[in-house]
Image (tube, rainbow, N blue to C red; front, side, top):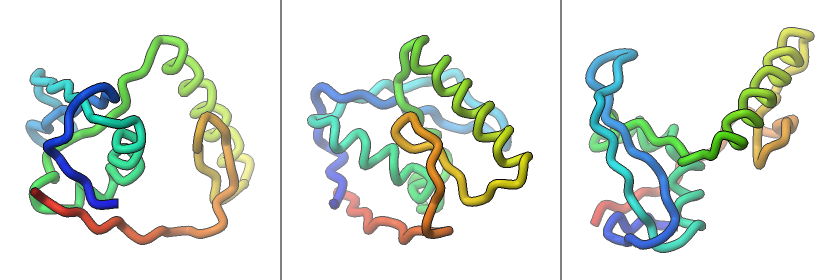
Length: 113
């Protein structure tokens, strides 16, 4: 799905610029997107966006509620525990810990408009 960066409306994601290695600027830009699907597409491929020339200094994270943050912390702790016990190819997807079948996926084709 090509990304059209001009689309704006309801679904939300936060974009934050990196100052230097391990430092985040105070500047946060809250953007709105036309569909939730576009939001999830951007969040899904955020790690690949960082590898492109125009997106290297951008940090993308979902806008979560306190309940969502707590659930994420619990899942993260459970994931860490299971990895320490020797389980491999685990990841958090849709608020569940799953076993990955592939170790790597292909990056998306991005279109700048």
